[in-house]
Length: 256
Ligand code: PLP
Image 1 (cartoon, rainbow, N blue to C red):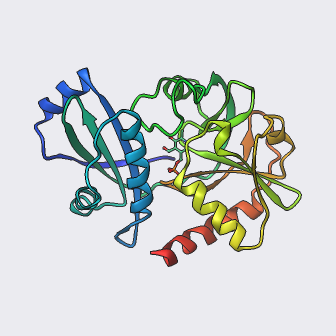
Image 2: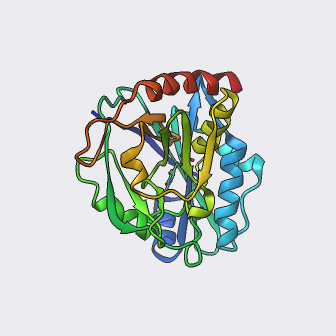
C-alpha cells in the first residue's frame, strides 16, 4: 500500500503569483531523497535541473541557491518546482516515505509512445509532460507502465527506468533510446559494475522483457524496485533484485 505523507508546501512567493505563472508559463522539477538527513546526489539533480531550464532558455538559479532551498526544506523526499513566466519562482513539497512500502510490483506496457527526442528532449523534466501524463492515465493498478519509443524500442516507465537481468548480465535502455537520464539509473549502473556485473546500455526490444530472468525499476524515491509481474506474466523471480535493492540502499548511504 502506497502512502505519501505530504507535509508542507513552501514557497518564498505568494501562492497566487505561482498559480498565475503556472497558467502562463512552464514548470520544471526535481525530486530528491534524503538518507539519514542528508540529500543524495544534489549536484546531479542541480545539473539535470540546469539542463531542463537550458532547453527552455531560462537562466538557472545558482548552485548555492538550489542547495539552500534543499537544506531549508529538508525531509525524506523533497520535490523542488521552478515555475517560469518571465521570472523564476520556486516552491517545495516536503514528503515523508513513512509507511511507504510495496509488497508486490506489477507493471505493464502502455500503448502511449514516448515523444521522440527531436520534438521533446527526454531529459526536459517539466510538469505535466503530455506523453508521460497520458501514459499514467493508462496505469490502472500497475505500479508503473513501460513506454516504447517511436522506433518500437523499450524506453522507460512514467517515473522510473527499467533494467533486465538476462543470464547473469544486466541490460537497460541506452540514453539514446530516448529516456530520462535517471539519477538512480546512473548510480545503479555504477553499483552493478563495481560488483562485477556486466551492464549493457543499448536499444532493447520490448519482447526482451518477457524473456528476462528478472526485471527491476529504478527511481529516486525507492531506489531499486524488483518487479514481480509484467502484464499477465507472473513468473518473474525477484531473488537477485531483492538482494541488490537492499545492498543498493547501503551503497548510497556510504556515498554520503
Ligand atoms: N524516467 C522518468 C520519465 C521519470 O520521470 C523519472 C523520475 O521522475 C525517472 C525515469 C527516474 O529518474 P530518477 O532516478 O532521477 O528519479
